[in-house]
Image 1 (cartoon, rainbow, N blue to C red):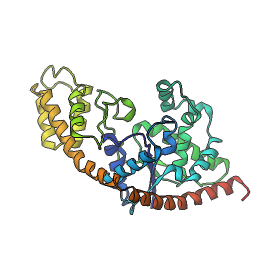
Image 2 (spheres, helix red, strand yellow):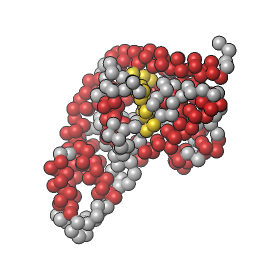
Image 3 (cartoon, rainbow, N blue to C red):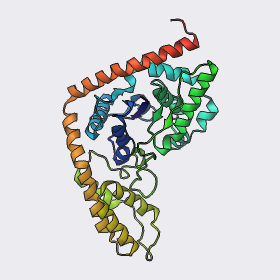
Image 4 (cartoon, one colour):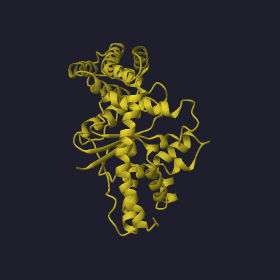
Amino acid sequence: METVVSGVRPTGNLHLGNYFGAVSNFIAMQSEYNCFFFVADYHRLTTHLGQKNPLKEDVYQIVAEYLACGLDPNKCTLYVQSDLPETAELYLLLNMLAYKGELEKCTTFKDKVRQQNTNINAGLLTYPVLMAADILIHKANKVPVGKDQEQHLEMTRNFAKRFNHHYDCDIFPEPQAFSFNDSLIKIPGLDGSGKMGKSEGPNNAIYLFEEESLIRKKVMKAKTDSGPQSANSTLSEEMQNLFQIMQAVSSSDTYEHFIKAYANCEIRYGDFKKALAQDIINFCAPIREKIKEYSADKDYIKRILNLGKEKAKESANKSIKEVRSMIGFHS
């Protein structure tokens, strides 16, 4: 059975982009693959060091949301990144094979330098190496990633090939990007361009745990255009984004109704947004209720994470022993 690895940073609640991108794939994969899903608390420290919210509480919240979305700890291994010291050791060793020039050329590093120019730390520079360690510690064959992470995955393959070449071995496979639907899904944000994400501003994303009033407020403020100028006008980027969200959460009849209204220059954006907001609310409501249930039972979450830690350590310990033996460390 092929192995799948992926994770999410505990920097806030899961949003629709997470759900339709990574999490929906996780749910589909867990019955068919040997899946390791982790909460990336090490990764969070590159941009959220010293946050007021306790890291442990944010980890519990993310796990509650994973479970509410449909992850089954009996079908997959769900664990916390920092519970696996083997990952940190492999990260250290892979850093010896990572070159300063290639890390500085990484698109996400350049973006973060612009966004947080007072905190350009070494962890930020070597983020792709830690991501590679997360993947390679379990010898993953497949990694469900969004388009913004494809460059990191290519670097992971480079590090795997580099290690295998240097030590004349075949310890690490070269993991490939994977989506259950054979396409990498990207849910756009509400600001008119780009993806839905935590770092794009407070009104760009719809979170699964948000209350109905806030969802309505965000959708009503979502950026649109000035309306179709003629019959069968090409959708603007702003409207493409909103229609893409509608296609994900609404019925096909609702989607077709508003697409035709736009093509016929009959669309009323107020009605469109009200329908979209209600469909998002209807989609998120059962998930939100499950999140509340899991969040209230910290003991259950702890048991899940302890079980996941033991399963993850069994896999990781085997890999790190092979790596240490191949390098020639005394043991």
